[in-house]
Image (tube, rainbow, N blue to C red; front, side):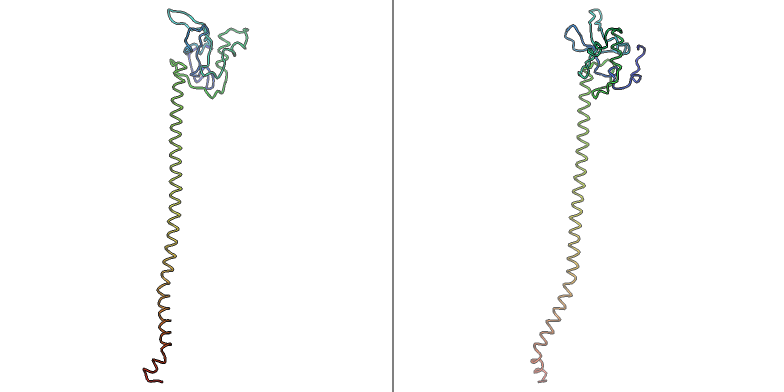
Length: 198
């Protein structure tokens, strides 16, 4: 407990490193939450807030996003150990809180919450844009595959037509020969008369 601040020493998912940890005024003087500075965090001394040359307020550790009731947890530890030690044990407890947000010194919990909202919205916007791009590519791929299928079908029909079209001249020639032979055969008596063979 105490000493120089080393955020990585405590790890994530603990109130001591969370941007939402602050000190709440217990006397109701209007300030919702005071900043818990590095020294107060490392010592666990979150029970007082001093406004220089003005007054000293009684405060309690406070989760500004209301994910933990830190005052209640401190009170439940009883009075066998001093308040600062109780607060330190509570703020260094592993929480695995989905709302945990990295603390930046000199930023209030309210400022850090606003920052987290902006970052979340930006991330959602990026995710939305990435999904739109993914959907666009998938649509273009389906359209391309559909076009390829359509063009392949047209090509098959063209080949079949050409294959069938190549048969038509042969069929026409055979039909002409047959008609010519039929004409000749039907006119055999007339030809015989012309040639004087009857």
